[in-house]
Length: 271
Image 1 (cartoon, rainbow, N blue to C red):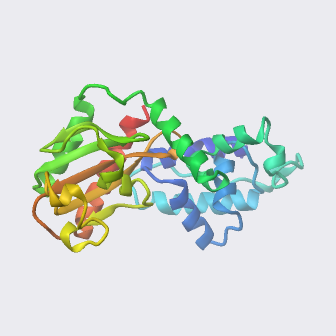
Image 2 (cartoon, rainbow, N blue to C red):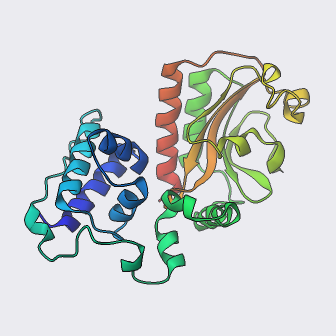
């Protein structure tokens, strides 16, 4: 089949199943895929072509992951004839139209390793700006998720935080968490630097946070669980997190619940 159709079906399936490129690349690599995650991301972004054989390993990896979800979409295989134009599999950065900077930006967060830390942070802030959510009023489409998080975890606070260059803006908040806290003291600032959730079962016992003013003073945080939220381009622009004044354990079931809720919030961030 035409590789562009295959790409469209694959990206649609990944979006519906809340799967990331990194999820697929790990399975693809385990099945014998030879391309880097950068090349796979470039392929799914329409910036790079893969040989039919690699596209089919990628399709197999995607379908295996989809079988673990309720999403009914399956990605069909490509035929070797799709490579007859002689272009597939010979690509690279020099085949991409436009400037090198445009090519890097088109890759989003998957191309973060191509940026300096300062450039990557600017890309992240640009992605946050594109949501047009900073300094906006509360909305039930976000508040519904903080309510669910608070009720499930039985904690004092649940928030959806967006992290700009210097502060933490609360798009949704339940509980005694101050608006516009300085970024450097925020637990969420640490969360956005994680590939996965940040779990602090007892902040007083965690050397990273034991002396944090939010632990030693109001709101006296002891328990924190936050999941990074990806915005435009896959850049991590904020967090969904729950907070309490008492330490507590965090189970695998808790992690699945928080992850699934975070994926739903991401759907709102990217509308």
